Image (cartoon, rainbow, N blue to C red; front, top):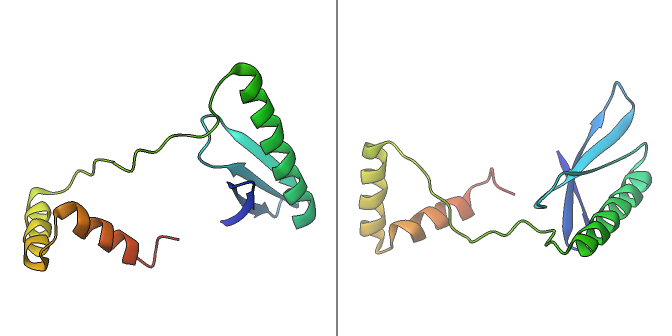
Length: 111
């Protein structure tokens, strides 16, 4: 999946070979907003139009378009793995949260 940006909003998109067009969705919005185009230039224009239309819709409705993130989320782990992480954090002189945040930041799988 590839990403385009418009006014700080990210649109993830991919190419549909059967339909011979690119299609995508704006991420981190409270609602689903999609866009499509046959070329990258069309796709960029469609992303901009979709974002602008959605922002206007939200303005008229008095709602916030962005999905708020608190910076916190719960992860359920196998208890033995939880213990191993806690020990690793203690040995590194870090909190468990700091260790997990560092491990996620260092991950090559997260862009």
